[in-house]
Amino acid sequence: MAGNPLTDPRWPGDLADAVENVVGQVRDRATTPVVKITRGIVYGVLASFVAITALVSVIIGMTRALQVLLDLGLSEAQAVYVSYFIMGGILSLLGWLVLMMRRTSDE
Image (cartoon, rainbow, N blue to C red; front, side, top):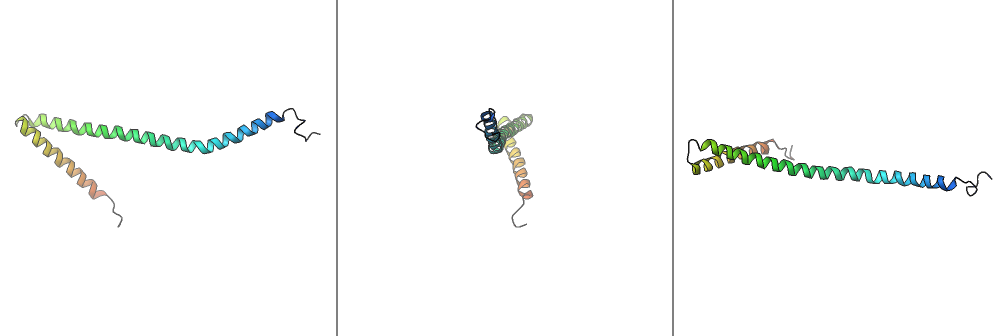
């Protein structure tokens, strides 16, 4: 009886291979998208931390450089206050420009 799987000596190996293939396909379809999404979230959070840290460092550096330049003509205390006003004005202007570029839900 050629059709009887119990008499076929390769039947257990073939069945194990078939089960392994099905389980592998299910695992790939279930976990691959989740792994990609998780990696995207982790890398996105990491990139945002690096970007925020770099932005804060640049603003601090610009403020300090402005203080050094203003210290040439003003006293140290005046240079600090004037640099804060200048950087505050620049950042306020940038914020205002970004606010004007936004899209509202009415459009």
